[in-house]
Amino acid sequence: MVLDPATILVIHLLIILLVSVSYFVTWLDARREDSLLWMCGGTLGAGLGIIIRFTLPQPLSLILSNGLIEAAGFGLWFACRRLRGRVIWPVLLPLPLLLWCFFAILPFFGSIGLRITVANAVLGLFFLVAGREVWIFARENPALRLYMAGLLALQAGVYFFWAGFNLIAPPPATAHLLRLRGLVLTDLVSLVTTLLLAIGLIGLVRDRTVRLYRQAAMLDAVTGVENRRAFDERLAAQMMETSRRRQALAVIMMDADHFKSYNDRYGHPQGDACLRQIAQALKTVLTSVGGRIYRYGGEEFVALLSLPDGAAVAEFAERLRRAVRDLRLPHEAHSAGIVTISIGVALVEPSSCAEAARVIAAADDALYQAKRGGRDRVMILTEMNALTTLSEPKAAPI
Image 1: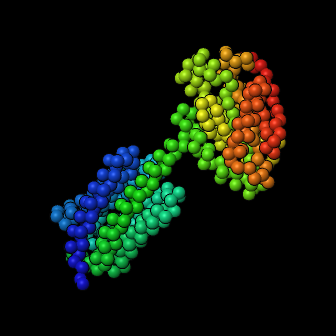
Image 2: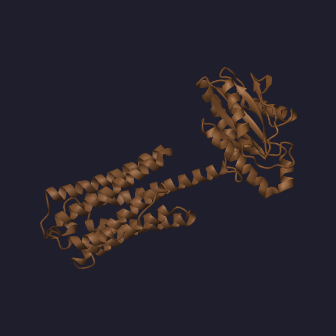
Image 3: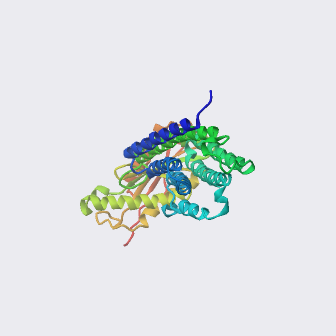
């Protein structure tokens, strides 16, 4: 069966229209994803460039069609950069059109082979840099990453092949574009790539939207740190990881002392601000050793920390307590005069077979003992059965 180039071109234009509508409709459901608009505009621009090439007289059609199609290459590159949240430069969009206006006065413009070589080499570069952006962005989805990068690399390869072919074996100067050797194959590849890229890009956008919603569900709205759901998911995995590394795992429960009195005295908005400052102070200290902080509920926080031994964990818990004291947040209803926290630590040794629920209960019990013992102190439960007081409350003048 002989494939008619004109028929393939019409089918390609219909697919371009269909894909552009798909990008736009998907954007209506996810308006923060401006990458979809860039792909929509770029795809429509390429389609318009193809139509102009066969409807307007030369040299105007050559300048406008090549300028629009290569501006569509910018659209593809910009879309992939926006997926990563990177800056783009819309001011560059007119550049291809200006360059082709300049090319029109150069001798090579009269050679169809050289025009095809230049146009396809530039498009190949756009697809390569777009593939690089996708490769970096889609690390968390290896299947889509390979799919998209492979498609973009394939299309770039076709453009480079077509550019090289026309450079080595240029067609006659009077040759008609639709009668060129290899045009059917290259246009078929472009047609299929246009459709498959739309499927992949929309898949990447959907995947990121799901991940963003999931991340939002794991964050506490008041303090901005991870919440109890995130802690529950992480605890079991961290217990296995620390056991494998032969490290002690500390579950550190922290509670702001007399916080109900703080809210009564200063109001709930100020109470929320206080919790945010506590959370950030704790997060700063924990991040320095790869620990993580979670808001467990109310004025209670919990941290996961892996250190070589119990002595290191005990010393670090003291750093957390002091970090909150060092904020010097006024608390007139507290005997210390400032906001303090009580800390209960459950220390799980590498050889321990304790379950997650038991570890949490042990940390909570240690916290209860710290509060019962006078607050503003650290209590640590070692080997799941022995409580040790690591600090005593002290007055802190403001």
